[in-house]
Image (cartoon, rainbow, N blue to C red; front, side, top):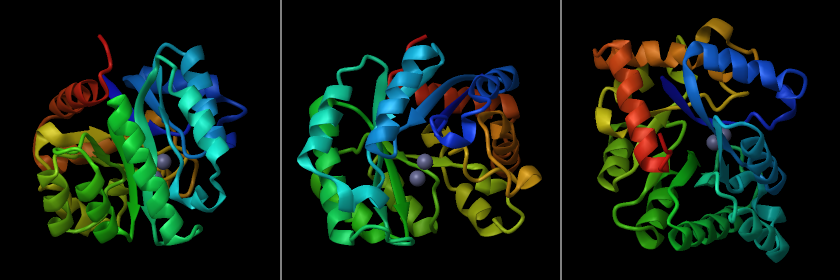
Length: 256
Ligand SMILES: [Zn+2]
Ligand SMILES: [Zn+2]
């Protein structure tokens, strides 16, 4: 049994076959999905998707790419969405200096504001960081709870960053990019993640595993990530499934 802790099944890429995508994943062993909001529209759709599927939970948040376009009305609607019972996290939120689609200052303000919301609602964070490790850690240290409840999603970075992330109390999740031929370095870093902090995610439709590289990713492919982690960490596939499921249930308070 697997939990895909980060996917975007609300995206247009799944418009034609969303139900069969979910079915295929369930057949592959995925019991629960956390559909992660990356915009106001995406958060709305995540909540809607969770209401239609028992196996889907929702996270509400706004990606740093959107930071330039946020108004007070955005937050009014976010607060409204947060009343939904199937919301298990705040995210994805964070900083992206790689694409820099929004001004860094606006990104920081948005990130900080969502951290406040997560504290008020007692919900864990799903954090996106790309090329912004220093600022991400600084903001979390200054504004987050101690320890920080949440996950550094789609982990990228070196051992030093990993060490700081773990010290803050965060969980770490890798996507199927860990299976890429050229991800040797990241696989080395992944060896340093203790099993009790590890989560699985696909970030579908993005980052399909090596075998399907360049194509649409979907939650059924998460088994490729499980397999590579089993190799890297030298534990059985069953153990990877068990620990990551236990971790996800605990962090996101998923019942059952
Ligand atoms: Zn992300
Ligand atoms: Zn994502």
